[in-house]
Length: 183
Image (cartoon, rainbow, N blue to C red):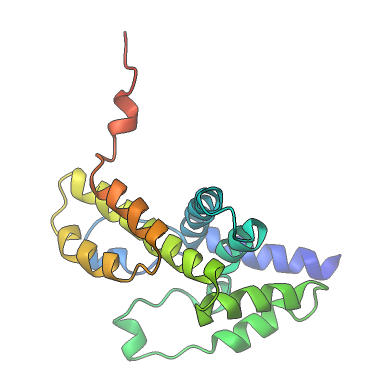
């Protein structure tokens, strides 16, 4: 149990590590844990829209897809030009003493390969999480997200991901707030 406690403390760091790409936007802030939670919620919805997928695997994949960043930090695309991380080594060290470490490693490997239906949906959810943040920033007046939205949209691999992204782009970030408004 001590090894599981250590794993949980280490993964808890993801609540404190800020995703680095927002610095380039000039606004917005999100931790890796916040991003992983949103990605998991998106995967939960995707699983309901795709009953043929393994929903447990899909949501679990979203939860652990960035787990190595507890050791490596979050490198954006510019930083990756100059810094290399060894994600496999980080995952290996992170999970080596827990009885379900191979399960975590397998999920991250499958996500990174991007070949299974679950991996494609999880990768789309990863991008949709960012699309949600960009859309909110754009709707609240920030200049810059409109440059990134088309780039992120092109990364989507599935019809489900594209439909969800289209709906996000065509919906105001605060539209839900005014539904059934009354005083």
